[in-house]
Length: 526
Image (cartoon, rainbow, N blue to C red; front, side, top):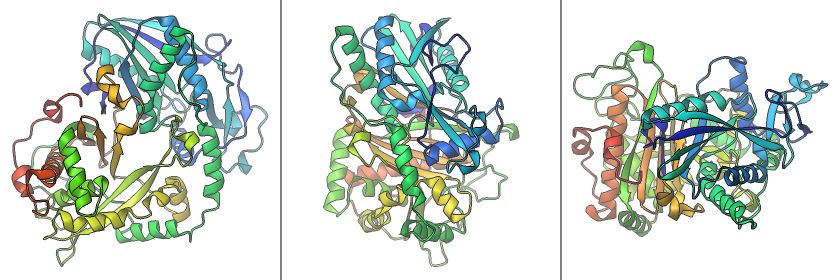
């Protein structure tokens, strides 16, 4: 399944209809009907996300923060689809719940006593949601249609409103494509991967009049409440918090940044060798762009995994070793990331899921924590040398990620902003993964505005391994990230059998090639 932005998706033109959730029985424009006070607390990530939105004020323009799923449906019966979508909303309680400031809840005087930022939860019961459809029109251009769907997602995934999600269908000669967009407070990346299988299963069940084969799932609301209780017991001398403090201190009080230069030519943060390229205009500061490159095909991915195991590692530690080696040469000509002895470090944050109980395995929600990664990379290190270091860096990382990142920030007494994040997911374990190609399934992310964030998502599918990325829209960032991706891919292929696993790749030969835009490099299905 491709994980990318809407403007890179091949959208089939057709008739666009937008589907909006409303409380059942509520008149148009009225949102108060049916809501029931719910004592379960917000999760820490939800609280931080909503607090950030509230800080800008209601009605203020804010950058979108949505995730979405798109896939072909097995039929175009609107009544059956409505039944499937409503059954899916009933299945995942978090979609029927919202968090509001306590002073906006009638009769509430408990804001000062709240441990979740003064937020109060209200929830609709199962069966308490209806869907209303609005035809947007027939689009002859896939690009214009993609832009319109993105506009709808931007406008109607407001974290301060309910619903903070919206659905859309496109009817075309080949059938029907379903698009579902959600503010991040509702979902994580894995939740997005689950959607196609579940809704297609529910569609089949409604169509046939038989129960679906889906197993029951737990509620993210229960998880959030339990997480809150656990996180309240964590203190500033907890082992994980001590490790976070040491990690922060080793970086001069800052979280890791991308190992290459990503800012403008005038930023003073180092430069690539050769003349400085022209940069984006000043009024574009903060805009981000992204792409997606294949690293390995399926058979080479299997060979890479075997080579990692032969050298005492696993697939993830092998990926990190290759990333570290490719990163090592990005700052040639600068002193970033190296000490006077030529000793460098690979530093990043990495996400881990927090689905700690089987009941949350297929639940829709934001089940993600962050953990720090840090290990030494010497100038003469080869792949096999770095596997033990990468393994040691991951030791205990899952336990650290179980403490919500906003809670870590709270305990350390300093705001923490991730700037360089490396994610790995084996998507093959997800229900429906073998059918994603046939379903033309895609996972989508909203545009992002940030002057120095770099995110890398390495995903393994049945077709192989690809790396999706986003970074500042500067020429420096485009070159640096493209070089890192190319170097990592070449190293992984060499480890898999294209060369001796211990042989350091001549990364600079790869990095200085003429680079074409990532979207032109993508073979199907990425």
